[in-house]
Amino acid sequence: MSDVAGDTGRALVIGVVGAESTGKTLLVKELGRTLRERGLQVVTVPEALRLFCDREGCTPRVDEQRAIADEQTQRIAAAAERGNIVLADTTALMTAVYSEVIFGDRSLHAQALADHARCDLTLLTALDLPWVPDGIIRDGPQVREAVDTCLRRLLQEAGVPHALVMGKGLRRQANALSSIEHLLDAPARRQRQAGSSRWRWFCDNCDDGECEQHWLTRAASATASKNAEDSEQGEGGDAA
Image (cartoon, rainbow, N blue to C red; front, side, top):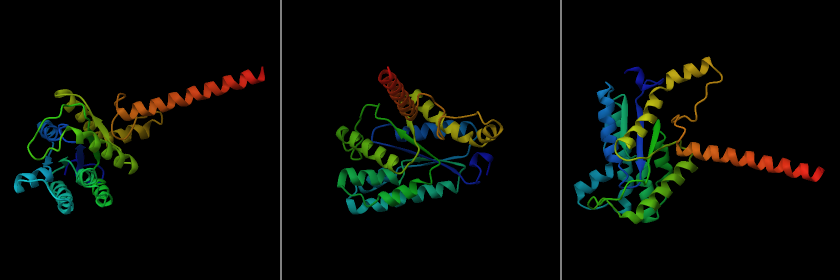
């Protein structure tokens, strides 16, 4: 296995998650093609839910959700034995999200988060693409926001770092690819950081200053600075 597999010698797993009709399947396909053209050994993992719907001709019942989540995790594990990079079209976490949103069932959360922890990078596809129908696998545009909200909540509560993927067409792919390149550069980056204490990246997932997570960080810092200035001015006025 080449150095791209990381410090542990195991495959790097990239989980692509997001609400329906946000381009996950196409993104995985295009990213896989691009990375293979660069000479990397990439295995893509299809969405177990889509495979179930195609096979059964219907959407799963609540009692079938756990098996679908387990199948997704097993497919990712099998892919990690065959390639240096795994691109997964969703993880068990998405099954847990849909179980909560559609059935009000939160019983899959703990195991799904534990399974998702195998991902070295989580790409979250944004809701900036128009909803399009796709047979029985789609629940409707009204469900997208609820799924996105639930997914973000679980990621945040579990402290799972994630990179938001936005944009249309090639721009969307380029944004996702930037986060992957940052992951692949991690060993060299750690060496650079060790050689210079001043070297600092924004986060462990990307160095894009326009990343949604960075906006929040900068906004919080700006608010704290403004509050400090207001406090100092208030104290000065009291002293006068």
